[in-house]
Length: 459
Image (cartoon, rainbow, N blue to C red; front, side):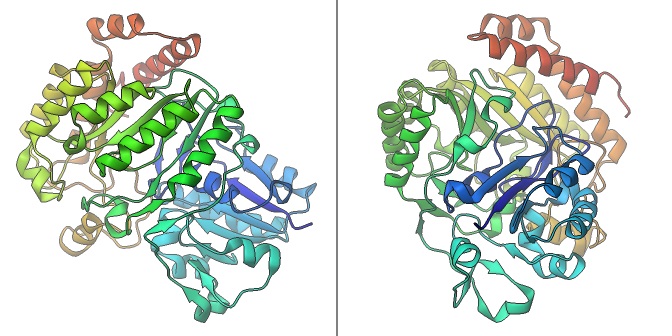
């Protein structure tokens, strides 16, 4: 029987490599890798094995030892620009340890698939994990085209397809160690992820999705997956839609499905502040949503306009008011060091976060990730070397800055974390909001991590 291994490789840090948005976790949190979970829906359960080295805390040697006792025919592994050096070394060695054909998925493989197939001894790259014919290629070995799959020796068969609607079957959630995953804003476990669309219809210049076409998942299939999640006793889901609510009527229908088919589920999602409205937030609350992550980025309107965010600072303020009125917690994503931002602009953004009703804040440093306009401009106009790939917006000192020094940015970010999370009033408010023992454990663990990570100004 053909065996397919879905692999999230080891890393020295808690690396999140999935959904073309690689980053190093700011705390001890992780979720089922979305790419791999989706791909598990393509194959029969008996053909699959799953190994998530991040949540299982496995190193290279233990992976190689594990694989030495297995007969694996195909490996689909994650590879990210944030762990570029580690991943390159790992897969180079893996190809010597196993006879399996290796395929890679992730932000860097999608953006530079030809380069990767030249530099590493791999079979190919999965260019779209929600729309492809991997099952036919792996199990049937009968194909006349390679749908969103790149084989260097069969490049003439590559067919780049992008349907408006897609299906991929029902993911095999039960194959993933769901009890080991946890979210920094989570309340219950076991935890899994689920999606209703792919990419984002907007074109923010710092985001990988800027250059990936938006498409929607068949909602009947989504409904069937909800039934499976409910039957498995899963208590929390993270909705992986990059911008939930871009289509209000569709979002309302999704909320109704969640309420009917997962009546006891607790969930979290990402939204744009411009899509927050009373009717939708009310429906989300009734369907079990407890936290919304908002891309606020900055309170400098000129900077928002320069990155094609297409939101206003007033929309941000309104979104926070609406969410607070329905007792939905909010996480604000902020970006420090955007093109044109001065130190004073960033300090004003931080002050806004401190004086707002936000439940959580995530401060990141502007980073020209692969396959983005920000990257193109940094290479063309700001002297960024084209061969620098280890880029991470969430952890460590930046390798590239626009108008402010790396040391200043890094110190400002650490200061922002200390000021936000170490406020006595904030700590008391969080303790009073606890709804489960799991939530208490997470708050204590993440709180300790924030203190240890940001207590010093310079790393």
